[in-house]
Length: 248
Image (cartoon, rainbow, N blue to C red):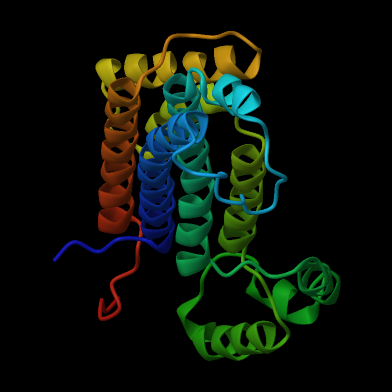
């Protein structure tokens, strides 16, 4: 059984809803063109009243409908890429939330303040002596009840906070190498190249260029992004989610 993250399920739903809307548009525009032809011939008296907008003239509508396939393909591609970027940030946050318990700022500050140069800490410094084992247990318990955070835990907190800040500020072009270096996911050179091409296409559109796009190319891009997201999801759920019944 394949376990999917909530982030991946959200990605699938968003993409499906967007393509469902595209299906409606691809039915609606040809139907509108037919209605305008019938209106021109006098077969019908008026066009259906649109939701949210006033009725335009057939001249305006024909101009607005011109090139609708390319425009639809562009908006679908932008949506697909945006959904993938959102998935990336959401899935890592989800993994962190499932596995990591980070104290808030006040709790951390209080722990450091209350456990600075205390008697229990002084008693536990030095070389281990078997004769003092019960003493070690006693002062270790006192530290725990006083909210003591071990150096290992402190380093994990620092590392987590730095990693989380990096993710929040990460740019799309850094995603593949970030996954490779930090999470040890194997992203192939071909996958990196394809992702880079789609990222550049997104940037070109955002900067006002008009690359030629059709629905076939958009479907190819969406299939690649979904496959990459599934690969990331598989790896993270396999290696970065706790086993509920694992006994340490």
